Length: 350
Image 1 (cartoon, rainbow, N blue to C red):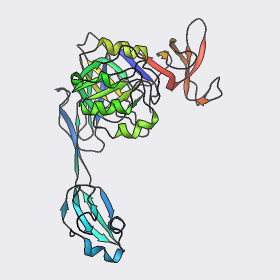
Image 2: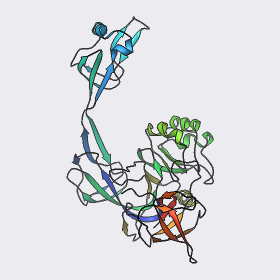
Image 3: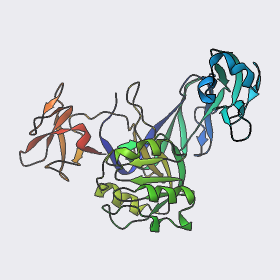
Image 4: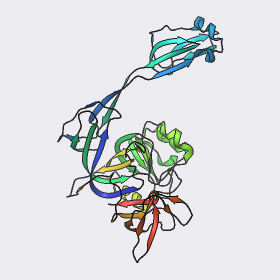
């Protein structure tokens, strides 16, 4: 089940699953202590295939493609290698889009088989291995400040946290990203633009945490090598004050950031965790769904900023004042005031 609300807590012991995308090999033992960079499991992704339409790329008839080929069946190629060309210097060229091998040809096209890829999963958080499967992955118990995010671009990193703005309403600007940002995970307030992103790439930042991002930037962010996560999802909203205050208090500490999301075949939410010494915090699984009695805070809508307790979890969809029907809960705000709030507008207080 996908947990569609946020979690924020300044000190908690959580159990973080580190799962492989397919069965493989687990490299650590139950009870072992791990550091963030430790590879805990690995697997091999099966070979993929790619078709290159040589006739179209060279703009020649299918029956004449063979005369322009520069490779034979079984040849190994690297991304960018010339597969076929016509017209000499400055002419038309068909290049290999991937590393792999030529597996066949026909109808003016080449079939390439990609090299199998080894996928390695790092611990990402420091802690103790409390569950270890033979082939699927591990669960790591770790203590620190834990914040579940609203959206992430699928990437992960571990680095030093650096808050670069003064308030949650302030966006990250290019002026905020200087030499000190190299290798750091930056915290902004509301959002950032394309120019700022280019500056972040140039300065080799290790990650970005902000309130929101516009939908138009999603493809660009998903192609990045470093994580970008947002507290408010896909929007231009400023960061929640609770998130910002906690992150600002942790400025300069090492932080783990996961932008991985999975909605359909299991529960996985982006998160930020700042490891800290345990002080008797009880283990909590961040994937635990809301129950009656859970403490929550409203992030958006007419009750923004109000906190209360979940008093009922209706089956199906709830009817909002706007007429919309969404999954959500009934929240007791105190003073005999009960309101219906969508999951997406809630932040869980642990």
